[in-house]
Image (cartoon, rainbow, N blue to C red):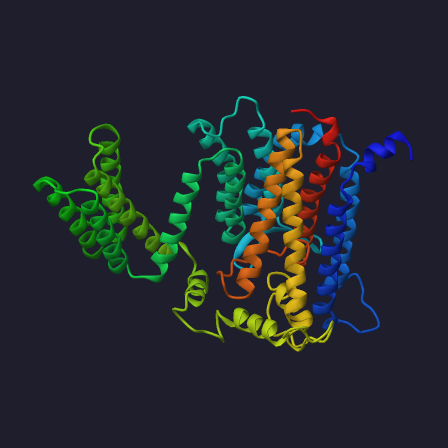
Length: 468
């Protein structure tokens, strides 16, 4: 083997590549199974979805080989250009894109479709790694915080404008990158609190939830104080009454503005004048009130009706197995019918009967559950878990900051997709319509994920030539 060839392929972590090949092979086999009802058993053409997926896999593998030809420093240098181009595409699709599944996020090119949001995740991982790898960057500094968050927020907002909330939520996965780079664990706890409050805000009525929050906060207040002055008692009572009465007596948008303004005033007072427990109580209650009202406003006036219905189905507020809950209901039937070992490859009755809409993309996991059963589903999840753990090990052995941060970006994106896609297929999470990595049908998905993956393979292969 020549020195050039050894440098190109000799340092590649072939276990990573084998895992990738296993996943895309399983993906194509499952796509073929779903699509086999649409052509004769003797074969298929490249006009079928299984045939097109084979083309995309071939393109992905060719791109993977081409990526190995570049110097590892190329990806850091090119990251701002790739990021800028992805933003241009995200803006352009708002005006020139076609609408699918309720979102304007696709370019139609001949007989194929291109979804810029899939490639925006890749470009964001690159630009974030390039930015955070700078020697003067301190993730603990507030200005660096804001710049980093903006790099993630801009493409996410553009995707939201397209109506593709699911893809936009994927960008939240970069919080794990920030945490690895030194973001305070306290901030993660706060974000988890936001998430819990968000879910509770959808499940419980506003007066009930605010009553619980005020009661617990008041209990903690008196638990930490042996006595309280008259003004502190008056403040607690006034804040409690105000947060109850305002949303019930005036329009929601005005109430949000008032409680939000009072929250800012209380926060300024706490930060600059009175760092007392009673003022902290006021800040917390006003914040919770504003946040919960914002959830109610967003649910009622921002989310589309079908998105509201999907959330209601997941939360058990409504049962609609013939309407908006049909996909989920049929998916559960397919997975449940697989039992322990499944019905056998190409033998899934739910699959053959085309009972599950979007089974070839968003709900492809239910085909695995039906045809390969619990054991097959477990093995797939185990393979995914092994891949994620392997990438974390790969990240930690990198000698360059750019490579390590990028690797964490890769594992964050993959984890979010895997967790949410499988979670929504089995009814644990709302249906937001994101693909299962390397498995779901789609050219944009398989190519974007493959480029994301093979850049990591290249960076890792040349780690011995890099320095911090």
